[in-house]
Picture 1 (cartoon, rainbow, N blue to C red):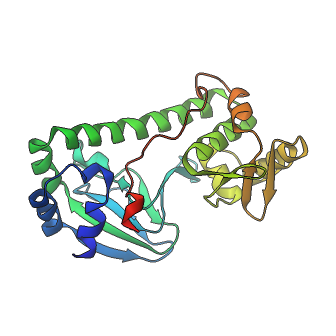
Picture 2 (picture 1 turned 45 degrees about the vertical axis):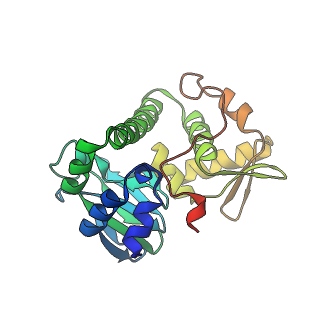
Picture 3 (picture 1 turned 30 degrees about the horizontal axis):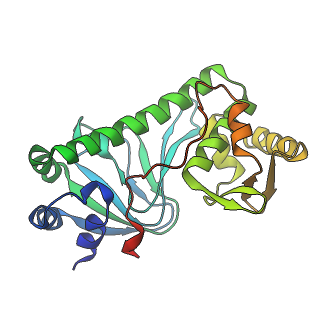
Length: 248
């Protein structure tokens, strides 16, 4: 079994496909390694394919009009990205960068279009993925327009806890390691502002900051302290479009 086949087979989005359909994807897929800081694609690149992250972590970002980097989100192993090319096969609008050394599987749009014509489940899965990411970005945009830096940071921490939180003795630890500058680039603030806010939140006993580790003592309470429309009461994490744990 090739490496491309292994990661495609274990992506939950593709698990309903037949062996022949998986093999068809494998025929067209290409696997490439990227060094830390290397771009998988850049703005104005042709959006002629979709990517599946096999190993590593990818940052999706764009530049603001004043030249600052705005982080749109992160991609974890087993997740698809660059999927907007499936509905708008023009040019990329954002940049995808390897946060750490990463292995990426490229799948041409045509190969996925052919399968989507045959598989309603695959079409629905791709549609849900696009919708989920759009809602996340729209929610963050509303926060940038109408909320304080403090509430934007709290909202982001709750979002990260939902995606990357792991239970710990002191609450919920974020397993994703982000610098203060990374957090600032996501919420549209400065690094100094984020550092000061995290310090204040630590003094109030809301979280613990230790060597790029963030532990939120009470995620539910933090979620309730920000606008309810943006963060309803937390629910157990839902299955994501990731590789299944049995793949390791």
